[in-house]
Image (cartoon, rainbow, N blue to C red; front, side, top):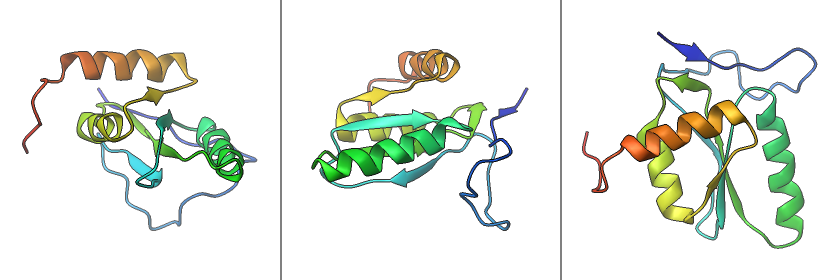
Length: 114
């Protein structure tokens, strides 16, 4: 089973037509060494996360934004790396929050290898 979340009509175009999306992938859209939290979003909530990034940046607060476009299967490696880098991971979507929680619980405590 594969579940990929995409945008809805009447939202800004975020990616070019030739952008590649792999099953089980995610895209880190905003990132810095000073990020305090990782915000995980999918579909229409990605735009809200990007707005939050811009608003918080004006206040000197850095956040990481991840587009979790593939929810099943999930990109555990990217989520784990972002969570470790920022020590925090949040999502507004109940579906994403449950899936991320499951993925993090099932991931080994040691550093993953390919």
